[in-house]
Image 1 (cartoon, one colour):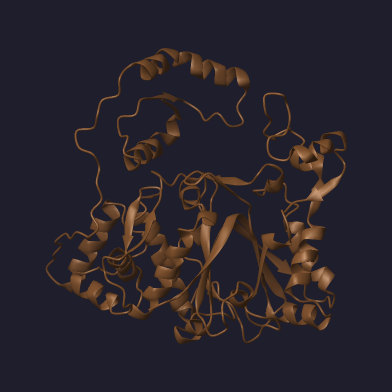
Image 2: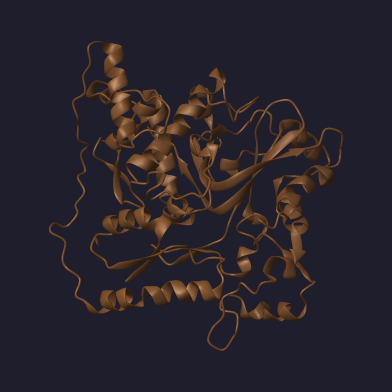
Length: 442
């Protein structure tokens, strides 16, 4: 039995259909519960109490046919008087059905998909992941279809496959990233020789736009189209972002390994330097760290640490509340934040004798707030006796509200990589969940 806010009713219907329970009973209330006055919440529920009782007591009918999933992609015929008219008809069809992202798509003809599949040795029907929230089968063929639509070349397909494998890891909590009201988007960081081979920009203006970012743009876009069309997560339906983000169209970058004074990020994760990898982390927004005159690591990194002091960012102090829960495996995940250090900033920091471990330790040490600032409203789960559910050993903080506590769980809560071109501007991304890194294999 579900109680659903009116504006989430479409997302609710999409979700229960994906979960195989399309006839699950529900009642609708006019407003969301979060942040509402208790009396308003009580009145909304009181108005629906008869429907709630009926939903709980009446037997649930079996669906006429259990939903199933087909491992092979289907097809639809589209035509026009000439080539341009056909392409326009394809784009209109895809927009009408919600399959596009708003930009023109390349028609995924059987021939184009076949060419795309030439970029990998994997069988077209190999299952890369089961993509939430719609539990779509992300086969190699279906990923190839979305790669064609995005404008990818065959050699880009293995990067998309690795990114989808990474998002399937429990720490990424794909379902929540897809359906959250918080605007979130996957950031892809490519490491290893494949970045240069595919001309994935790691330098000037690497976050786009422009012709120099062709590979960045189409690879990132192919992931978004796959999340929509395979994960069955369309804006306004399962995707109920309050605002959305322009970064949801495409966000792919390579680490500038040549300009970095440190080991590449994938080597930090245990891969060999000559291996190619994709790291995926969900981020909610980005802030520029501008420091054009300092020659001290502390001054540069204080900008990134202060970004976490923004009390509207999420999640803040999640280690105190146990982190986000991946409902698929009942695992708690702590957020990771990403700092893309500009080469000029990295040089200054390294010349002072700091490595990336020092950077992470400093960010963790400096990103602190008084306990009352983070949890002054008492938003901490408790058991029936009033004891903290997740960290009872720290409940003494309630008696010392001015004690400063770390905003992030540990130094490992920070991903540090070097990217960008000349200039003293780094970028900090607020994280939501964890991350995953996968090898790129043809």
